[in-house]
Image (tube, rainbow, N blue to C red; front, top):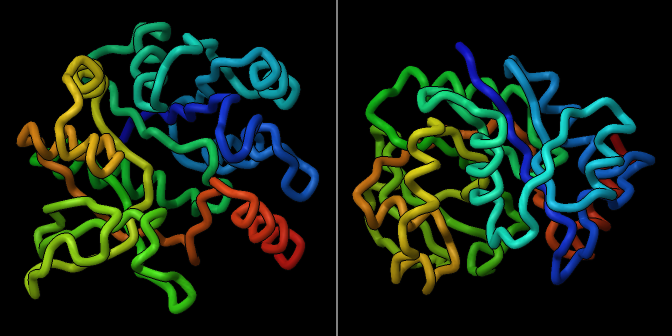
Length: 242
């Protein structure tokens, strides 16, 4: 099993500027994410950034970092450029690990890569987890997915009731992806779909193109993606109590 992890990390953020550099328990967040990726079986781990301060921070703790264009609108665009800079072959498997996921179980990275490589019927692999009692499923910041018994994703939405079907399981989507270089280079050339623009979810661009997305359950105990000050407070509390 051979794959590469790329961690997109941009400096600008409307809610948490400089997010990758924010301190969590004595380490910048990007160092924590890089550290868990290095525990996986990935052949290489790279941080793809648009800012010299993040690049220098990564260099300070020994991470391999790549400078990408600042005008990219999404992490996916940044990953696609990184595959070009690194001159990766079209068949190389990439795990796109978000730079604000410092609490992901590193085994999830290996499991997702293994699932994607084994299940050749999917163009993309991703993760989900069950909702906890403390999570409000109506919260539009929590992205839902619907998956069938064959592990195929049938939809994504910010709405709780987007799909009503007893044959599908609704779960919390965790935005970690596996795909081949060839796929992601094609993906970023496609126009946004209407559903993507409506939901503000770029994975719908793939579904609307008829691409197949498979999903497996995460091993992580709870899920904290850090997008707000409230998320940051929870993350720092979790580190202190660990």
